[in-house]
Amino acid sequence: MKSTRVQANTIAGAGVPAENPDFDFHLEGSARWKPTRIYTDGVKTYIQFPNALSGGDAPVLFVISGGRNRIVNYRLNDTMMVVDYLIDHAVLVSGVGGQQQKITIRRRG
Image (cartoon, rainbow, N blue to C red; front, top):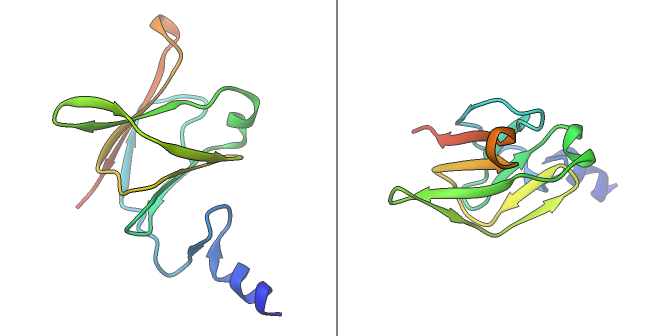
Protein backbone atom coordinates (compact mmCIF):
# COMPACT_ATOMS: atom_id res chain seq x y z
CA MET A 1 0.00 0.00 0.00
CA LYS A 2 2.77 2.44 0.86
CA SER A 3 4.42 2.18 -2.59
CA THR A 4 1.07 2.98 -4.24
CA ARG A 5 0.79 6.15 -2.17
CA VAL A 6 4.33 7.22 -3.13
CA GLN A 7 3.59 6.69 -6.83
CA ALA A 8 0.36 8.69 -6.56
CA ASN A 9 2.27 11.63 -5.05
CA THR A 10 5.06 11.78 -7.67
CA ILE A 11 5.29 12.86 -11.28
CA ALA A 12 5.62 9.84 -13.53
CA GLY A 13 9.09 9.30 -14.96
CA ALA A 14 10.89 11.70 -12.65
CA GLY A 15 10.18 10.74 -9.06
CA VAL A 16 9.56 14.40 -8.20
CA PRO A 17 7.08 15.06 -5.39
CA ALA A 18 3.88 16.27 -7.07
CA GLU A 19 3.52 19.34 -4.82
CA ASN A 20 7.01 20.73 -5.59
CA PRO A 21 7.50 21.15 -9.36
CA ASP A 22 7.86 24.56 -10.99
CA PHE A 23 6.69 24.58 -14.63
CA ASP A 24 7.61 28.26 -15.25
CA PHE A 25 9.62 27.71 -18.45
CA HIS A 26 9.19 29.06 -21.98
CA LEU A 27 10.07 27.02 -25.08
CA GLU A 28 10.82 28.50 -28.53
CA GLY A 29 11.34 26.67 -31.80
CA SER A 30 9.92 23.64 -33.50
CA ALA A 31 11.09 20.08 -33.80
CA ARG A 32 9.31 16.76 -33.97
CA TRP A 33 10.87 16.02 -30.56
CA LYS A 34 9.92 19.35 -28.91
CA PRO A 35 9.57 18.73 -25.15
CA THR A 36 6.03 18.19 -23.93
CA ARG A 37 6.88 19.68 -20.53
CA ILE A 38 9.82 21.03 -18.58
CA TYR A 39 9.96 21.62 -14.85
CA THR A 40 12.26 21.84 -11.87
CA ASP A 41 12.14 20.74 -8.27
CA GLY A 42 14.48 23.63 -7.37
CA VAL A 43 17.57 21.43 -7.65
CA LYS A 44 17.27 19.44 -10.89
CA THR A 45 15.60 20.21 -14.21
CA TYR A 46 13.37 17.63 -15.92
CA ILE A 47 12.71 17.74 -19.66
CA GLN A 48 10.06 15.36 -20.94
CA PHE A 49 9.96 14.51 -24.64
CA PRO A 50 7.16 13.04 -26.72
CA ASN A 51 7.28 9.38 -27.66
CA ALA A 52 8.76 10.44 -31.03
CA LEU A 53 12.15 10.72 -29.30
CA SER A 54 12.34 7.00 -28.66
CA GLY A 55 12.57 6.34 -32.40
CA GLY A 56 15.49 8.70 -33.07
CA ASP A 57 18.54 10.32 -31.61
CA ALA A 58 18.20 12.49 -28.54
CA PRO A 59 19.10 16.17 -28.92
CA VAL A 60 22.19 17.58 -27.23
CA LEU A 61 21.58 20.01 -24.37
CA PHE A 62 23.68 23.19 -24.22
CA VAL A 63 23.36 25.58 -21.28
CA ILE A 64 23.91 29.21 -22.26
CA SER A 65 26.16 30.97 -19.76
CA GLY A 66 28.12 34.17 -20.32
CA GLY A 67 27.02 34.19 -23.97
CA ARG A 68 28.57 30.76 -24.61
CA ASN A 69 27.02 27.35 -25.16
CA ARG A 70 28.29 24.70 -22.76
CA ILE A 71 27.52 21.01 -23.04
CA VAL A 72 26.21 19.69 -19.73
CA ASN A 73 25.79 16.25 -18.26
CA TYR A 74 22.35 14.74 -18.09
CA ARG A 75 20.69 11.36 -17.93
CA LEU A 76 18.12 10.19 -20.43
CA ASN A 77 15.60 7.69 -19.10
CA ASP A 78 13.23 6.72 -21.93
CA THR A 79 11.62 10.11 -22.77
CA MET A 80 12.80 12.01 -19.66
CA MET A 81 16.03 14.05 -19.61
CA VAL A 82 17.22 14.76 -16.05
CA VAL A 83 19.74 17.59 -15.61
CA ASP A 84 21.47 17.74 -12.23
CA TYR A 85 20.90 21.46 -11.70
CA LEU A 86 18.47 24.29 -12.40
CA ILE A 87 18.53 25.62 -15.97
CA ASP A 88 17.95 29.34 -16.63
CA HIS A 89 18.72 29.45 -20.37
CA ALA A 90 19.55 26.50 -22.61
CA VAL A 91 19.16 25.11 -26.10
CA LEU A 92 18.43 21.59 -27.34
CA VAL A 93 20.03 20.83 -30.72
CA SER A 94 19.69 17.90 -33.10
CA GLY A 95 21.19 17.49 -36.57
CA VAL A 96 23.60 19.66 -38.55
CA GLY A 97 23.42 22.29 -41.26
CA GLY A 98 20.06 22.72 -42.96
CA GLN A 99 18.74 19.67 -41.13
CA GLN A 100 19.42 21.13 -37.68
CA GLN A 101 16.49 21.47 -35.29
CA LYS A 102 16.71 23.72 -32.24
CA ILE A 103 14.54 24.39 -29.19
CA THR A 104 15.42 27.25 -26.83
CA ILE A 105 14.51 26.95 -23.13
CA ARG A 106 14.21 29.94 -20.79
CA ARG A 107 13.17 29.91 -17.16
CA ARG A 108 10.80 32.72 -16.27
CA GLY A 109 11.01 34.68 -13.08
